[in-house]
Image (cartoon, rainbow, N blue to C red; front, side, top):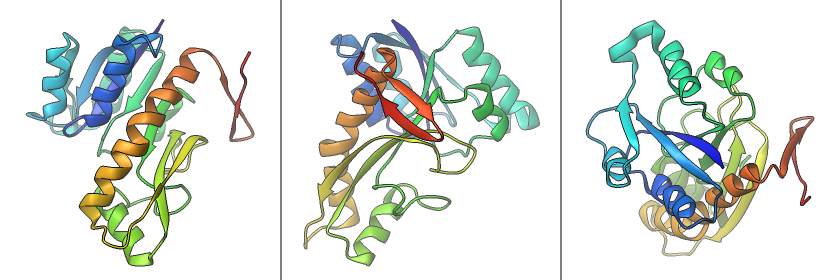
Length: 206
C-alpha cells in the first residue's frame, strides 16, 4: 500500500475522487496528508471528513523556507506519491527534484494543447472554445520543472459541444475524464506498472 500526499488550493473534487478510489480498494493506497496553499478551502473539509491530516503551508507563513518545509512535511510522512489536486501554486525545481517522477498532476486539456504558464482553471476551457476545437479532455502527467511539461501518463478525450460554455466544458471534463483517469494513473503507480524512459512513460502490465 502506497502513502499519498496531496497538495490543494480549492474545493478538492479530484481529491475526493482519489480518496474514494482508495477507500473502495481500487487504489492500493491511502491519502495520509492534505496540504493546502490557503486557509478555508473545502478540500481541507474533505480531508477532515475522512480523518485525514490537513494543514496549510504557504509563502505567507514560511517565506523562502516554504520549499524546505513542504519537502520535510512529506518526507517525514514517508509519502510514495504526491498528487496535485487543484493546486494553484507553481512548484519549485527544488521540490520537484526531491520527488522526481513521484508527483502527479492532472491538467484539464489534452497536452500539449492549452497548457503551460497561465493555463489553469477556466482559462484552459476559454482558450479551447475560442480556438473552436472539437475535442478537449484531460491529461495526467508527472510533474517536471517545466509547467505542464512532464511525462504524460494518461489522457482521455471529451467532446466539445457547440453550445458549451467554459463552465459546462469544465464540468463535463471533470466528470468524464479527470475523475476517472487520475485514480487510474495512481492505481498504475501503486502497482509499479509505470516507468519513465527518455521522458516518456511506458506502461508494463507485469
